Length: 285
Image (cartoon, rainbow, N blue to C red; front, side, top):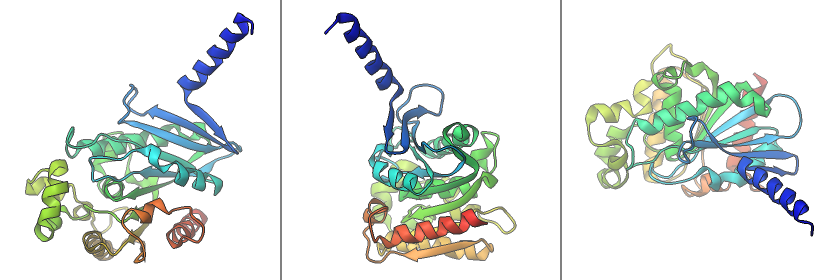
C-alpha cells in the first residue's frame, strides 16, 4: 500500500481515538468529557446521545461502589437502553475515597451536573428535562445534591434544574442512623468516606436537608430487601412525607442490591418498567 495512503489512514485512526467518539446504531457515544476542564479520569463523563435532531430528555446517572470504587463505563448497556427509549444518557465519574472524603465527591457530582446543564443541548439534550438517577452510593449523591442547594449553588445553579430523581437501593440517606444501627457496616464502608464527626455525618445525609416549603424534585425510591438499604429507604420516605414532597416507591423484593441496577433494560424487568412509567409521567407534566 502507498505510504501516503497509510499515513492518511493512520491519521484518521488517531483522530478517532483522540476524540473517543463511537457511533452505534442511531446513537453517538462521546467518552471522557472532563467536566472540570482538565484531564482527570475521576472527573469525567460519557454522553450517549441520539443521532436524530431535536431536544431529548436527559438521564444523569451516578454509579455506586460504596464511595470507593465503580466506573461510568460499567453502565454502557443501561445507557444504550435509555437512548433507544429516546433519552440522552450521561454517565458520571467522581473522585473516590480514601483519596478524598466528603464533601469532595458530592461537589464533583454537582459540578458534573452544572456542566451538563450548561452544555447538554450541544448533544441533543433538553436541559429543562434533566432527571437524576443513582445506584447505592450514587443514589445517596444524587439525593444529596437534589435536597441540599449548597452543592449546585457553588456553580451558580439551584435544585430546580432537577426535574426528577430515581434512587436505586441507596445508602447514606441517614448516616448517623447507619452508625448507630449498623456499626460494623459503618466502620467497614462509611467511615473512610465520611469520617466519624456527628456534624459532618448529618450534613452528608440527604434527609436532614429536607424542609417544608422547599423545592424537592419528584422522587422515585426503589429498594430491595437488604436490611440496611430497606431501613434507609423507609426513613427517607418518612422524611419526604413529613415535608409534603411528591414521591413514589417500588419494593424490588426479588432483586439483590447489585441486580436492581444491573438488570435495568432486560426484557420483563419490573424495575425497568417502573422507571419508564415514572419518567413518562414526569415528561407529560
